[in-house]
Image 1 (cartoon, rainbow, N blue to C red):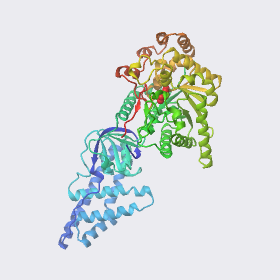
Image 2 (cartoon, protein in one colour):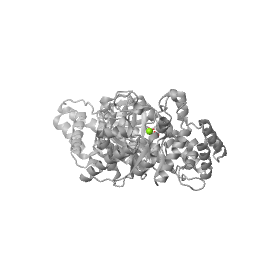
Image 3 (tube, rainbow, N blue to C red):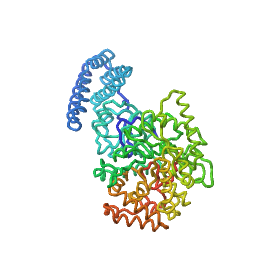
Image 4 (spheres, helix red, strand yellow):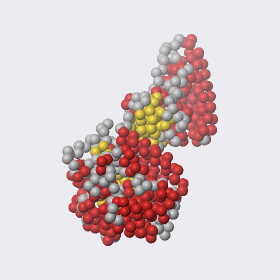
Length: 617
Ligand code: PEP
Ligand code: MG
């Protein structure tokens, strides 16, 4: 993975086309006789005329395609072609040094470019790209070859280039080109403005990209997070494919209920947040108008690196995520690795039964070198954004106390360093183990909120591995034990006056929404893909009807009886055609059974959980 500056946001996938278009060009250089000077100057004059004419045409085309603002770039370039200083310098070199027109022009332009590069003002410095672009265009005319600057791009590719120049950018076609990766450039450079106008995801300052990437290499360009994956491992590939599929599916349902409140028919407001794992998900959450981020799984930020991300790297990632969601609450969960979630660079201890071994908060408490930088990064973000901190895999009060004391130490450290943070930062505990359910009331006394992780809770309650296909029939979120546990946690939180939400995949399955409301849940955090569907069910429900569903379910003794309660309710609801079309299993759960495993839940965009094993790059 390479990183860069996301200059035009978006996500692209496709084969690389390593383009020589921005590379410094080999210029033929030869001495000329005195008698040849005027012929060479005539060649130069003709090339300048032609370049100027080209630019006028390009300006007109660009005006048609992208409007006046973009077209003005080429007006400015046309002025550069006629810049007296540049033209005089080239003429003088040709005459005095007795060199051919190409060499004279190239030297004069290079000298001016160096002068640009020495300027302090970065915006003006970036105009150097226009000079290089113009220089190249004149050279093309002199050399009668445009191959290097105007190559024919294979459709569907991601262009990887040393520098993206405006004239190439203006010719790019969003339909055929998926993304741009450049080693140099600047966010205000004209080419980047054009790429943005065209909506082409663009990543700049990707060091040595043209050397590290070969033609045809499969790439995933995440110009939201500033990352470029070269030959991405299947886990990353799958995540982004899913993300794309999710986006397509979203758009179809977006319009209906986007700006309607998540409110039952009898007027009870539900806090409907989104689960996210990467910046792209945050954008998706914003697109579906999520009422906040109820679960930000930070694993992805660690998994995509080949080293433990530093405090600063994490801070930058969290800032970008916060920016992407705008002014919404953000619940950041500290790293939840161990068991099936593996970091290639962090050797977990060999354990005969990793699911019952070191993972989540337990693991972090043993590894301050991971926990402390993450806490510092989150606290720093809290100075500028409404952030809460969530601890995963809490087994009981002892672990939450230990986590809190570590947090307090980090806060004291920041205070001493005069680094700002929010001292009122809310903290929460995930309820994912039977011990946490049984001691939920004690835990609630120590935190601001509880968040029920039904994926792990189901696994640990039912002693049924969430990643083991052969246990699929035993891994059943509708088991009466899961129902009773959720109810117990809701009651414990209510008794302590604390908030409680559900953030496991159950929350994102519209078939369970009414039931969760009936059990007393007033906050859900769901994958962005399902958010609008869940909202639709909320809006079709009443608290009375939901309470009936919950009453029926809490009295049920078998899984089948629980399912019967839900099926009966779905028959009665006003969203009946929709509810009937959904099974009590989410699409991913159905796939789980077909594919023989849980689907990766790295980012929260997927539905059912799956192993998070990442192969070293
Ligand atoms: C859960 O266990 O329900 C949960 C939300 O956490 P994860 O799926 O990331 O383990
Ligand atoms: Mg979990």
